[in-house]
Image (cartoon, rainbow, N blue to C red; front, side):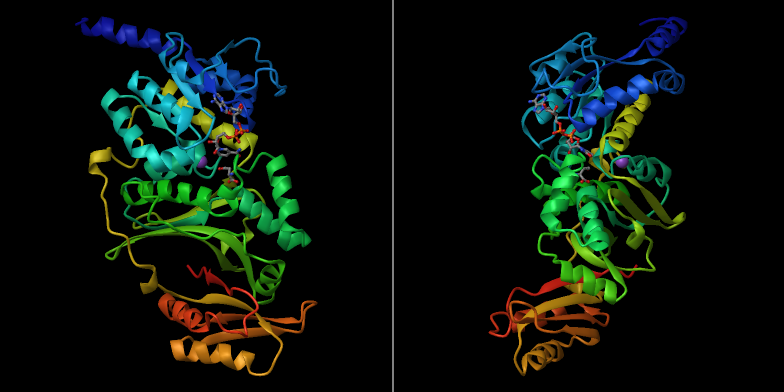
Length: 444
Ligand SMILES: NC(=O)C1=CN([C@@H]2O[C@H](COP(=O)(O)OP(=O)(O)OC[C@H]3O[C@@H](n4cnc5c(N)ncnc54)[C@H](O)[C@@H]3O)[C@@H](O)[C@H]2O)C=CC1
Ligand SMILES: N[C@@H](CC=O)C(=O)O
Ligand code: NA
């Protein structure tokens, strides 16, 4: 054992050495990290207390022009070998995918006792607890600020800033692609497919964009946020997930006529009934701040028992904002941070039961496309009456090109199970020309 003065001296020396970074994945985010470190190098060194230097990179295609000079870095064909390299202090994974090379690299890096940074919410949602345990055993950091809400420092905000609070709710707009699509449809009346293609071009969408539009990406992020907010084990499997695929332009127009905007919202709540988590398109009243979160912006709201309501907003996707979060994690590591990856050590995380959705109360939006004949509206309202659902407002639009009529309504506050019951009563009705659309209303 070194005498104390020599140990302190050795630590000072290593803290003044550059932090040597290996980067796996040079797509939207990876290229952004290279650009950010190049542009803000001097500032980062002052803030981190030591230089942060990329020393090795790996991607599928070596020849692609990414707008950055890669010739100064060692090129590695097999990213999984980066973990074992003696020249690398920390590995950054920006490849994606919950399993495969990303997971191998995470296990190998942490297993080798090196810190690991990732933007990969799919991997953290599915394997975060295992990786966090490994990081704890090895006494190194597992960091993933970019994985939730891109550039917004919401992981830090909940894990550190709000750490002294009991948090009862966390909810927000967690997918930039969906928010961009919904906003463009609302503002320009654009077509869904056309806007999705633009979101892909801008680098917002996942490799498989169905993860975005079917709500899976938002669910990955929600599972992580809930864990941080409530001190519970990450629980992706119990999340109820509905995406935006079935929203039509008329829903957006009717919502606007009724005083709402449509947003994909991830919602986590912990109560005596257990943990409730849902991702679903919601109608958000214009008076609510989330209604004004547009384009690729994300926002997260959390309620703490001492701090009150917190509202985080910023860019949730894209090269610059995501790189900003990745490099912030590197700065923490350069400063010597090694705390638990989640709200507390993995063994201390609670495992609550799943709270039943039907017990919840609220208002709902329902849209029916129906045949234009007498008695149809009466049939729908009778199903509502029989299920105990009270209607607050209702719009019926005239005959469309296909001969159908659109009926949109907002219910009064009531149990969600009653609305589900009304829809069950109408299932198979000859009057309906398509599956009804149900969206809950965000009233908190
Ligand atoms: N694009 C965005 O706005 C955001 C992305 N993320 C996450 O960041 C990660 C990266 O996303 P993007 O940069 O958008 O993806 P991308 O598809 O643009 O880039 C992926 C990169 O990984 C490389 N790659 C693929 N397989 C590889 C392998 N076996 N070995 C080495 N490299 C390999 C590809 O060649 C490419 O350079 C994903 O986990 C994504 O979910 C997180 C927040 C925002
Ligand atoms: N595909 C994601 C990217 C960031 O996480 C999104 O659209 O939000
Ligand atoms: Na973030």
